[in-house]
Image (cartoon, rainbow, N blue to C red):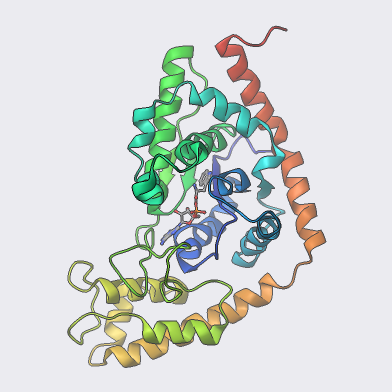
Length: 332
Ligand code: TYM
């Protein structure tokens, strides 16, 4: 299935919570142009989702919804592979093997685990702790060259690299070492209510994020209500004006203008004008996005997932088989 002359990218999204502009701008929209240049594989990581409690019926719906988001964003199933993680059992098998290479101290360092588990580290699931190892398995199974993600996943990709190197060192050259790819601007979209924290599906305030399923009117209101900084100038200054810097980043990525162009456009104008225009940009983006989102039937989506898994299963099985041979458990 993959073209040997092209490099491979792999990435994924969890079917939990509401997908938001951070997921779109930091990750998914970045994948769209990459489809031309790479063998592109995009996963719906359902086994990651169950590391925290999920309602089964809800989870089932969300798996299909993630594919809708991929398609609405411009992922083309004729060019890229879209599949469900649990459809290829090699993911959990390789995760188990990598568990024997990963150390507890590696996982204890993971910022996301510390954030998600909070003060309750002893009572969260073992799966939540082990989640980065499953992510490493996802990536390594497809001889991945690069992993395009938002900044919050960088540490997990680094761990994946470390595990791959450790395995190769112990058992001989087996895994390709993947690189992380992040946007220069937009790898960390911040919360609209608090520009010091990332925009997050699990944020307690709905004003924190613009969900890709928000009605365009609600989204526009959220922009108008977004926190701003002191002063009046529309200037990109992450340190002193984090709220405006975040809004400028969103504006620039959605409207395809550079931040410099936007700064120039708003010389002499205030936050009110700026937010009103950005609200309009977000509104127009969502109208088009949601039209596409709603244009697929569940049946079409299920077919895309099935065909995707069928296409790439042989790659995963070949890599897993190689690993099994290396560690000495293949007896044929
Ligand atoms: P997840 O589902 O939390 O997020 C999906 C993608 O969205 C990015 N992202 C952001 N980017 C910019 N600003 C934000 N505020 C923001 N919030 C989220 C994330 O960085 C991510 O790229 N563990 C992963 C899923 C995963 C995966 C993989 C990714 C599982 N296996 C293998 C790559 C390769 C996760 O939970 O992402």
